[in-house]
Length: 138
Image 1 (cartoon, rainbow, N blue to C red):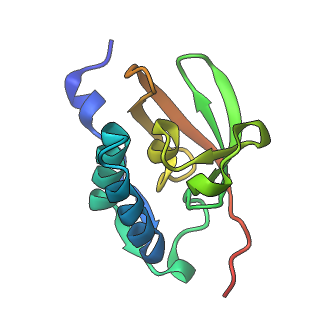
Image 2: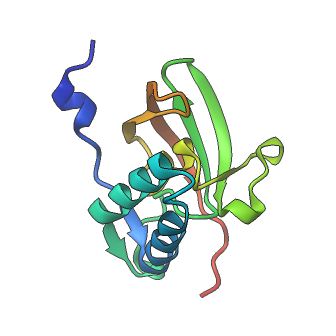
């Protein structure tokens, strides 16, 4: 059984400045239609350490990164690319930042875990196994 303190404590997260701005705008835009995801994403952005794109550690989940993670509830390991809603396609392994899992993964580093609600509101522990960055334009 998990203590309340452990369940509410979240690991430190990291974001790229331009992505944080874009994600803030997205989250505000979905406030009426997806208030839970909007609130979760805004909360994560608010507590993130912000970096310039060239300075963020390479093992951090950023937009367009491919991330392998395990879901301790099911024991399943998944590999997905975190994308903006327009390019999301779950059958192709591209999940939207505007899903509960997507909002939970952003900003985490390899080896970190987070307790995060799924679409049904059940808390799940997601653990980052590996992060592969998409090629960024310099």
